[in-house]
Amino acid sequence: MPVQDFIATIDGVRLACQTVTPDTDTAVSAPAFPQNAASNDDAPTIILLHEALGTIRMWRDFPQKLANTTGLSCLVYERRGHGKSDPQTVVPRPIDYHNEETDRFLHGLITSLNLKNPILFGHSDGATIALKYAARFPTVPRAVISLAAHVFAEDVTLDGIEKAAQIYASTDWKSRLERHHFDQTDTVFRAWVDTWHQPAFRDWQMIDELPAITCPALILQGDDDQFGSDEQVNTIARHVRGAVTSHIIPNCGHIPHLESPEKVLESVRHFLDTHC
Image 1 (cartoon, rainbow, N blue to C red):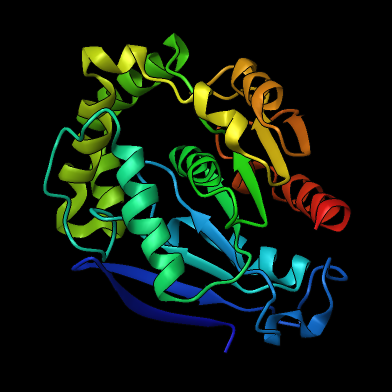
Image 2 (cartoon, one colour; image 1 turned 135 degrees about the horizontal axis):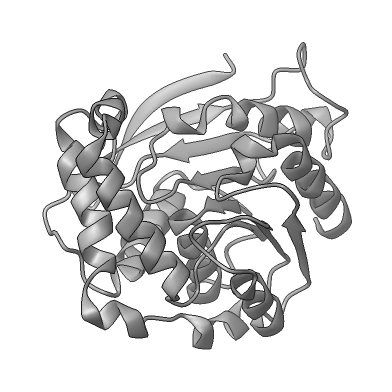
């Protein structure tokens, strides 16, 4: 079947996971990899890493489109405190919480599932985790694809989070998020807002880690991203040491894979054809 749900236990923490395999009957285009790639033990798996408030379901149908376009299996998982995964226990999180996400959970997941040559595909906070993993474990990923990553704190990000907190407090956003996070909704929201609102977070950055990234990198961001400026893309492109391709997607906000999915898929396909 194209979609299969399962639970992976990493260091005692249960993470909700889903695998999505290419559906050749409805493939949107000829895949970037051979159709039998998904059955090859050494074929890459694309790992999707969600944003700060994300879950598996919030990717909507994009993982299936990505699998169909590339001919590769995708692994989607919910980080601790999100969706059906085990609850988050520390709020606000430490300033360096990305390190635990890479070293403990993402690396644990890749190791426990024996994934070879993974391609990391991250959005927003997930893109930051993808980049950090590629820097801390440079021999593991075959490539990294970043959508709207943050590699340093800037005013537009903090202002965007403050506006989000106001919307959460004054609209039905909480009830809509409860369809995805259930009784964890307030905690996951506070884990995002309160962590970034810590005064020390204004000095957070991972720019000095970027030169350790040696795998090919695709860096994408919308031109109307309310949580980050183009300088995020420019900084990543200047500092990584692997082959890098960067695009600013026109008429697009913070969620390129849902706002401009065809442009994202086209960029991913060309990137993988060229570098992988």
